[in-house]
Image (tube, rainbow, N blue to C red):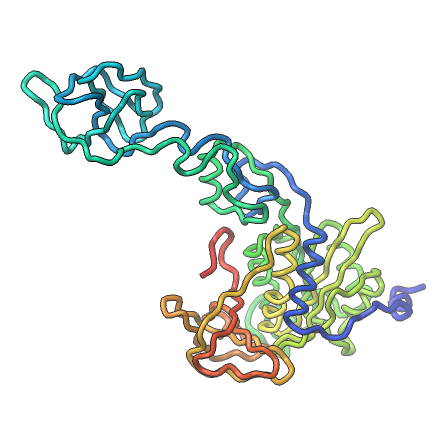
Length: 419
């Protein structure tokens, strides 16, 4: 039986179009159910990964009394006789006699028997070389466990690893972290009308998604190499089947661009049928971008892989990324479902009837306001280039000026926090 015949005979069970919020929840759940395995990695190689277990301290923080200033660790009343020096990295002997002091550096271990630390800039020397001055009433050192106690949980599993977390882990005494393996992604670009270089001409348009989507995927924590981007794939069913089968051999997620409808050269649906995929979401009641989809394939050994069908219009494709791919990847990472911040609409944004409207906005973070941008057609990218995210206008509503609405932030560079 030919590939075309097999695809025509096989029917992928397709659920009805999903509401936007329902679709996000559904794809997150299937991603979390297929969360990627955990592995131990050196600290320096964990940026952009996700904690697979809570981060706990291996010792008190600090582990010993630590001077907060440069000065003199004193015992008893002054003036004090200088009996030594304590530098960071040393374990000093105790101060045993009243009227004695040791010079101490910031970060050094405070000797046992110290009653106070006199700041160096607030001290003087007497004619016979003793140290005089009045220590401040509060302690000038950090107590053991002031920041955390040994075994205390500092961050839960599912926390994205960034440079701040890496530094905290190092201060706790960790050499490695147990993290989720990053998802491996691939991209298939469909469309004979696409050019991969030069300006559009003669009825052909420049492919904008092939260069851009991998960068978005990396910002969501995926691994994707230049060799993982294939296309334009010829507008035939055998070419689509072969390309998708090859991409799925190594990838946890394959994104495709175009072909999500049922036109004469839209081959994604019969390709999924030929490969035995089942739909998680097949179209979403959202504008722009409603003909998006997410399908799942499960091997005999239980390995799960996903195909995200992004519409061919560039802005619609990014709507599909933030709507389906972002929550799926959060689940695969073992992270919580992304929470959407709220912002106040600075101007009205029209609704889209029974559809959720994702409207491109620029955020004024200081004021907490969202400002609609121009050039927001589904085939346009100019508005997207100046936007910070999408305001969510729920079905059956209009976004009035002054309304508080959720915002889907566009992803930042790996490790950066959203507003």
